[in-house]
Amino acid sequence: MMRRFLMVAVCACGVPLALYANDDGRDLVRKSMALAQPQTAKFRYKMLVFRGEKVLEQHFDQYVKRNPDRENKMRITFTHPARLELLSHAHKNRDDDQWLKMSAGNVKRIVGTDLDKPFANSNLYFEDLKELNVDDYDFMHRGTVKAVGEECHKIEAIKKRGTVVYSKLVLYLRTYDQYIVRIDYYLKDEFHKYLERINVKPVGNYLTPYRIIMYRADGRGKTELKLAGNPEYDVPIADAFFITEKFR
Image (cartoon, rainbow, N blue to C red; front, side, top):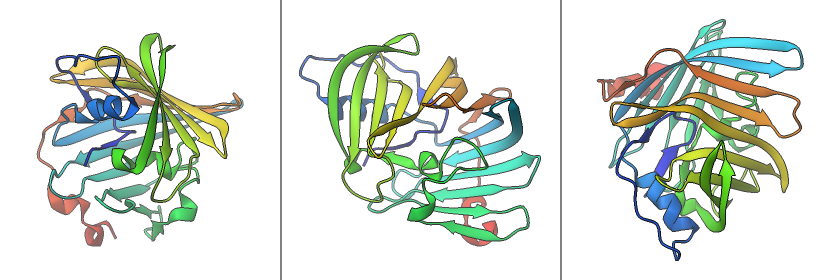
């Protein structure tokens, strides 16, 4: 079972894996997902949402805890301007569970019909904050192209089970280490938006993008996440922090 939160700004900095001409899309994505990850991570972000001449600035903290034999967990807590929280539990054989806590304190469970809705008035959807499970997709290697200034493998991913939001994803994996630098999102077979990971630097043993930008394909807006300071990896985070009862 290979999974990864695609919106988590971390990927391991390790020895590049050798690639061969007969590697197909699934093999390449598995190599990307197999890169070591920290057991826990804490990030502090400034999120800028651009719509025309207006810019909405928000701040949030993101916490992630991996459980190799159980579900992985993520919690996002907004600190400015409003108090808003998201809790996500990933599962092995079914869709992730997500709960949204509003500023007033009421909690809403995110269901399938909510997954294509904007998160915190941004260009990110609730679906974008879930884990990608390799076993849920069919993959096709479409050759190598340039993306974000890097030579990349272009991999098409079509979801074959679970709730389907996007008709297709296109992943761009750097050829020398399989790090995902760009993702294209297709909605109803139309190019809808794309995400880029920028200013990637090593922090300890882990490659970390200090900027993540989600662009609308029509050019009418974007959402930029900027790391505020360095992330914290492999630090203690209590399991209780991710319990749904305490979230409520």
